[in-house]
Image 1 (cartoon, rainbow, N blue to C red):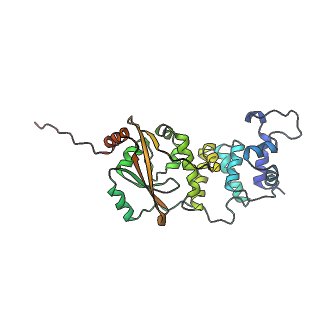
Image 2: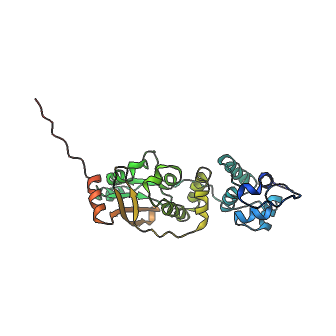
Image 3: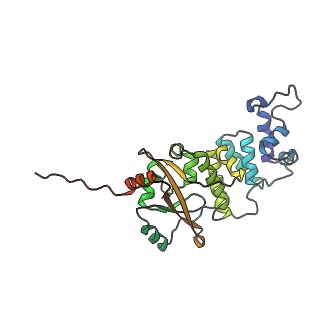
Length: 278
């Protein structure tokens, strides 16, 4: 007996012409659409496992498999949401698990005080999901200038994958995207990571889900920023783990003299102008 999930996967597979995905046309076949073997290869799963999913003999695909199938079928955001919903009601990815939930955003007073001591340097309290929980004025001057801090609950991962301005801010966008996706595996908890990855997958698409499944350990060299005011900055990142809080204190330091000079101009308060009074 099939399941809604299996029926949907099979129907989408039957509706896809191989040539639209750059695959060869195999000529007249008994079944229309994409071959099961081709879909399995694109999704990185076995034909046997795909057969079990379509026939309803496996009702618990992992979130990674659900994302991979969505990418392999080239689903649009609405179809991705429907696929996840079908996986859930079929007994899918979250069966027997704690409900996905966002992490707390509270920062201890002592950590806030530590952050104030770093003014006007470039520093922030974050977590591995990319949440910006607190920051210095220097951080706002450098990273907030391109819109990262425009929302009430800023998140670097969401910004990188959904805000077009991130590609101008980060000249090495692909490397930054790899870092943010990889860090989700190191989130405060599995439930927190699943909450954000489930939220991002429909809107970020393959740029996000492909990286999430790569498990590629990032290099984390100097971070290059193209500030909207003009200067290119090269920043070294020093991270202090706040283990008890599942948070981090991130401090960014200039990697060269030019960056140090640019940071001085960007982060120092603008002197008040004298006005003549007649």
